Image: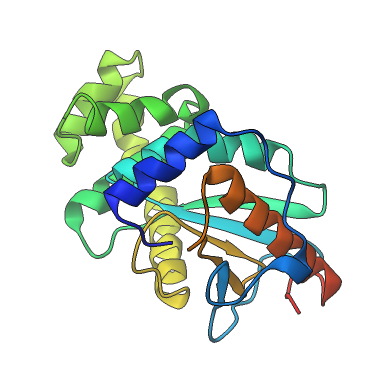
Length: 219
């Protein structure tokens, strides 16, 4: 879902100013404009459910602007759909550290409270949260016990989840963020999208497309 900053801002303004758009039907979606096929298709965690992945990074300002909107959308997904966020590193040590930050906050139960605050600290306050010490200092300022956080940040579970995230990003050929993938097969493009509701409508249509085929595998 690669887009320029100007296009991103136009889409964001469209969301804030436009009326809600009905979800797109699968039959209305056009390959190459609204979505592209992921080749080869990727297996999903639970073949009995439709998996939606959002690849993102705290280092991406577009991801920060999308974050509250996609959370609201994901909260209304049907019971047969799962939603997972996957932080990417693109091989950058700095982005690997903010990926560890995401996983560590999740493990200590502070993600819901501090998730958007991380985006805002980096993109709006221009805080350098790309080294371990800077991250530890920042989370301590947010009321998190520094020693507990440090242990989790560099712990086995965090490193295991980071390895899995990197593997997923490689398998899904992620070359830009944010990127939304449905059912291990369909990547949201939204070349004609006028607002985020259009993008979410496309994603809804792709969920329906996946449901119409083999559940969780697309069709």
